[in-house]
Length: 148
Length: 148
Image 1: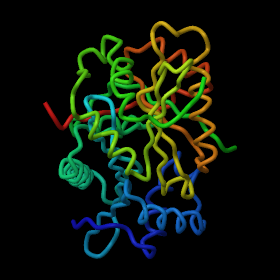
Image 2: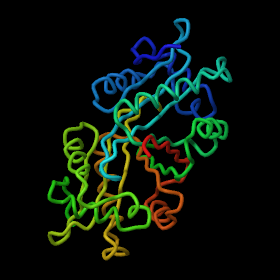
Image 3: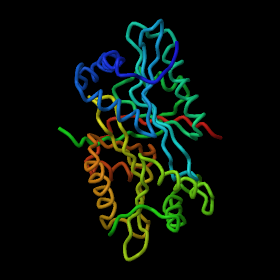
Image 4: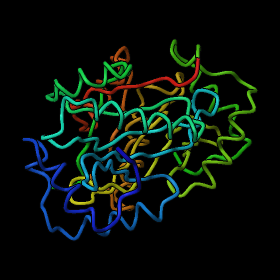
């Protein structure tokens, strides 16, 4: 499996990964132009990368990684994982663990003292996955929607 | 109450706010140079601001705000709140709600579709506060520490 930054041609594949579950199916829409704008904004940002995992030339996973400066904890830099997915057909082969490990490697390389992520309370399989990767469910994740 | 970006002279006051609870007391250390480095990094970043709330010339609150591009949800930009505190002597006067509202205003202004935050599972008062501000406890917040 190789890891690289997403390119515009990957967008339909990444959207398919995100849409392939009950929550994502409601939120994502293949062909929406917002994804193209967002990828440009990600590429231009100094905080965020969208990483794809590729196997035999096929996108089988994705992980959005943000590296953020932080004031608390004596000025600790933090990483955040978002939109971590492995293709349904490729699950239970350990690819998720490899993708998470790549995120951890990049966070360490960037000097982060901590990685954070929030997982929807209904995603019980994801919770077991993150616990296996050593993450601790120490926090309550809050969201406030600003759009309808 | 006025809101402005933190300056180096505010650092001891902000650290005091963060250190004024059982969790913060273990993590923060007044005089640590890491805060000065972090504030420089925050000021240089395109993602993050450290906002202080000032009343009668005194720093009474702080909120770290990140505005991040996002791929999921049709390319939805997100805001994150971190290190939100009001001075112990100034609590229960509604200042926290004003500070949170300023964060919400800035997030909307930046085109964010959502605000996220993670609150330590032991901070029951904070949970009630965020619920009063309209935030939903829809997620489990995971952390992986990379330092000792």
